[in-house]
Image (cartoon, rainbow, N blue to C red; front, side, top):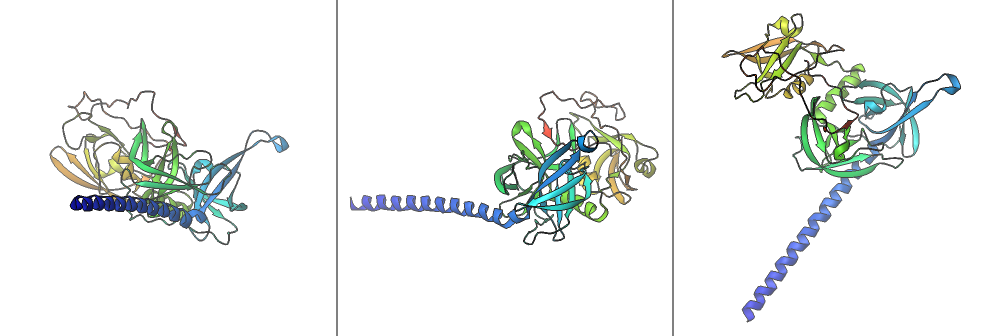
Amino acid sequence: MFRYGWIALLLTVVSSVRLFAGSADALALQQRLIDVFEQNKDAVVRVKAAYRGSGEGSTAKVMLRVGTGFFVSKEGHVLVSASRAAGASRVWIEYKGKPYAAEAIGHDRLTNVSMLRVLELPEDFSIVTMDATVARPQLGALAIAIACPLDFEPSPSMGIVTGVDKKLGNKVFPTEYIRTSISVNAGQGGCPVLDINGHLIGMSVASITELDASYCLPVPALARVRDDLLFSGHIIHSWMGFEVAERLGAEMENAVYLSTVIEDAPAGQAGLLEGDRLISIAGHPIQDVSDVPGAVFFTRANQFTSLVIKRGEEVLEFSLKTAPRPDRVPIVRQADAQDQSDTTAEPQPIAREATTPVVADPVDSSASH
């Protein structure tokens, strides 16, 4: 009897220890979330942009757009959604209840990113740092957004990473986007999204309204846009002059092929041919058509880049000098799943049902490269 009493006492102690450990872990996680917010809240600002509407003089209407931005340099550079700042007649930030005039440095509507510079700097602001070497967060990882909803001061929102997407329905993104369960409505667009360690995951660029979720532009792509806007005021996306298609349902490797090659474009001048199957672009492997925009995104206009293709049974590598992306480019198309024999056959447009979720502030991406 004495023995069983000791066993019962031991089980009670073990259960208490486990309960205490679980409670301690929860408190530690809570404190970590608080720390991430406290360390970054002074970098987050409200952005307001005034747009002149129809009418002249005193009858002209002014439209106000409000979003969230964050400092990325001690010189006062702020990143915000282009849908909240591009084309504005006047733009300013609000920091700790005080307005500060700002000027537009540049905009990239393709990725929905704008850069501003605050003309008179606040005394005590901080910056959000970008580290492109930090590993991409895993699905299910915690994500923390810091934004200025409505008329409130910077506030935290917590969610999880729910996906990494290269397209949504028939819209192909310019590069992969991180999907999170965080809503970014009511002035929150453009906010920074961080992981549990306080590292920047990306910047919110679109809201998925049907899921009450959002997309953010990952740090490597965001840093590429930031650098171009900072040094030249605009980003020149590269272009090679080909369209791609994919053999849907084809039981073969390298099912992505060049469906069109423009003769006078860099691809044609380098010797690429219609029907060549894409293996990689600038070292980025190509497994389906949605891989192509992201690979091209990180190439630079007017610089040489490598393409590896398969022509027949031969693997070839080409070096071509990219050109600036033209204003109007063709729409990419996919091959019909039933057509798997003729690599030069005319591909069919991508078809999607009408129930595709709506993305607010969408990026305008073309899949001609």
